[in-house]
Length: 184
Image 1 (cartoon, one colour):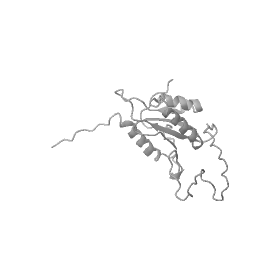
Image 2: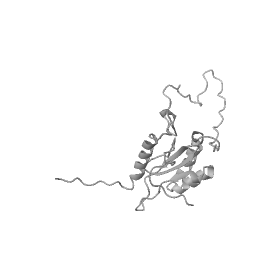
Image 3: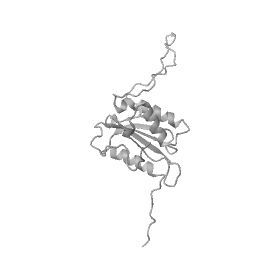
Image 4: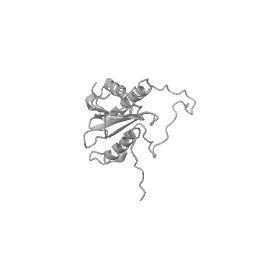
């Protein structure tokens, strides 16, 4: 009888497995939204039935000068809002850290999120180093806010930062698997 070699899960693949498990488990919890379209993401697909957006820079067809467009208001922390209302500031904060020299440090994301108003005690973060000391392929972090999870993921394996609102797991946490203590 021939034995097949055992396969082990490498430390660099673990964050991806955790992310997949978190998403799968989030869909199995009783707190999941009844409408699957109610989840909010920074990369949500446009509504198929929606009218196409127009380019604001195009001049009106009657030859009149286009009215000046006001710049979009910067994202702000909404302490009395829900997770979806705070996704823009969560996403903006994550992207600003990603653009910095600290983009590979989980602590930098936690500190920046605390800096805009999120509660550190409600956060989780995965390790930014593997068990053998290499840079993690991805870092995940989350905050429980108004009964939902704001989750971010960054790293070489993810390309651009990703953020999403998801249901809280039955454990009361947002991330599945081992996370590091936020003890600073």
